Amino acid sequence: MPASGIVTVAGEPTERITVTLLSQSTDENTGEKPVVPYGQTDSEGKFTLKVSGSELGAPAGEYIVLFQKLTLADGSPIPEGQTAADADAVNQLDDKYSRPGSPVSVTIPAEGTDNLSFDLTAKR
Image (cartoon, rainbow, N blue to C red; front, side, top):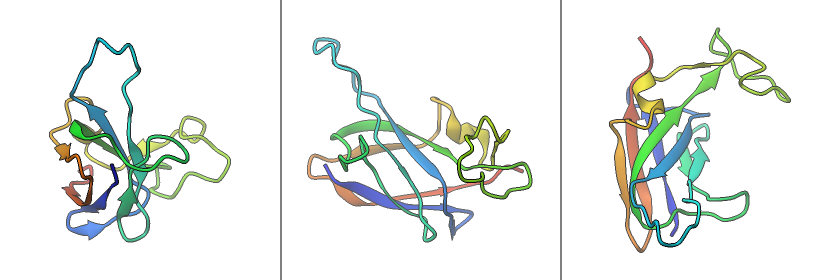
């Protein structure tokens, strides 16, 4: 299903936030790995979820939503060609958003949605 929206931090659209959905539905009978929809915000805070490099959207269901904004310690972007681990990146968002116990949840309806909206807080 198509799934997109916007992320703000303290009301301001924020770029380079990774949005990851963890399914709360389990189907142990299929033996299939759960799909993990993800996306990244642009300069306007907008994101589109995808389940692979070319497959957009997210399956209908209940999800816990995780958020991270990884940067260098001074807040600047991770340089091209470096991984977050190589750059000793830090998460600029409150840690509660990056754990499986995140307080943010969402339901993706069967018809999809283009109006997901999340307002987060930065680290203090």
